Amino acid sequence: MSTISNIMANRERVEWWFSALCAMPWLALAGPYIEACVVRLVLLRWPRPMVDNLRLNLLDLLVWMFLISSVIAIPLLILLVTSKWREIRGNWRYAVHISVAAVGLLALVLLFHYDPGRVWDWFLD
Image (cartoon, rainbow, N blue to C red):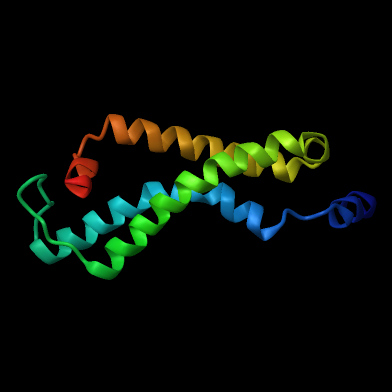
């Protein structure tokens, strides 16, 4: 049993910047929903598109920063994965991070197009 733990301990860890790139779709997805929850606490009801224009400046700036940086981070992640595929293929930790990023990107696209609470309509109006 100790040899398995030694093998796991000796493997290279994923770099922090790669983890941050893989988390960007989830941060961009969570931002508008967190802001809508905060506005809901302030207004005591859910925000409606084209009616409620209450913006929290610092939180709104942070959400837009995540959205803009995800537009840069996602193509950069795809470029890094395709260029370093042979190095990444041997380490299962990279595969987990890439899968998390892919599921986050899929969730971002699906919730942007099929938003049941119209949070994206409210956020982008």
